[in-house]
Structure formats: structure tokens, C-alpha cells
Figure (cartoon, rainbow, N blue to C red):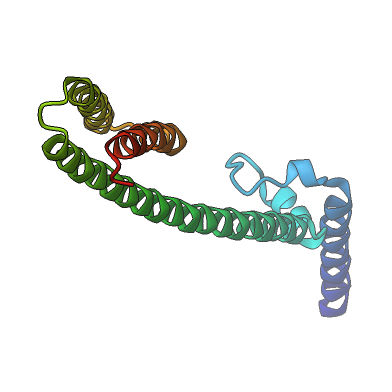
Length: 177
């Protein structure tokens, strides 16, 4: 009897293994979602033996690697933009300092022309007009800065150049140049 018992037991074990093997063949990758709580033991075993869980892990790892690569590219782009932004800010600050020096120089020249042209009403009117334009430009720049904006540097340069030409004309009219 013991021999018959072992033979039956072996047959049952072989049948059980066959069921598990066939269960592994019968499962698909869509059936093998680890988050699925209502899956039975046979289905889970089929997913393990069928390699579906491992396939899912490999797919998720590939997606993760792709996302990490994309993240590195985005980070590099962000770093380059930050560096460019810092450079632009530094350039803008340098240009603002340069324009402030030009404005200061124009003010000094206008004061000098004013003292030299004392009594010449035509020149004094022109000096006054230039001072008004310079003050107007300065006010416009300050208002833009208070709003968090900036006047385009090219526009500021053009207006300063026009003021410089006006000052040079006055200097020439007085014979200072």
C-alpha cells in the first residue's frame, strides 16, 4: 500500500504542477497586475512562472530609466537657462550703470554750458529743454523700474544719444568744442 500511496501522491503532484504550468501559460501580462487584490493563487503563480511579473518589472525599469534621462536633460536645460538669465541680468546691470554714467555726464555738461551761456536766452532755453527731456527720461526709467519692468536698453541708449547730440550742438554754438 505504501507504494500505491506514493504513486498516487506523485500523480497528484504531477497533475498539480501541470495545472500550475498551464495556468502560467494561460495568464497574460494584462492579467498580472500586482495591485489586483482579487487575483487567486493560481493566477498569481501563473504570473510568476509565466514571467509576466518580471516583464512588468523590466518595463517599469525601462520607463524609469527613460524618465530619469529626460529629467537629466530638463535639469541641464534649466541650468543653462539659469546661467543665461544670470548673464543677461549682469549685462543689463552693466548697461544700466553705463547709461547712468552717460546721464551724469550730460548733467555735468549742461551745468557747464549753463554757466558759460549766462545771459544768452536762446542757449538757456535749449539747455532747459534738454534738462526737461533728461528728467522726463529719468522719470520714465524710474517708473518702469518701480513696476518691475525695464525700458528697453536700446530705447534708452537712443534717447541718451539724442541728448548727447543736443549738448554737443550747444557746446559748438558756444565755441566750447
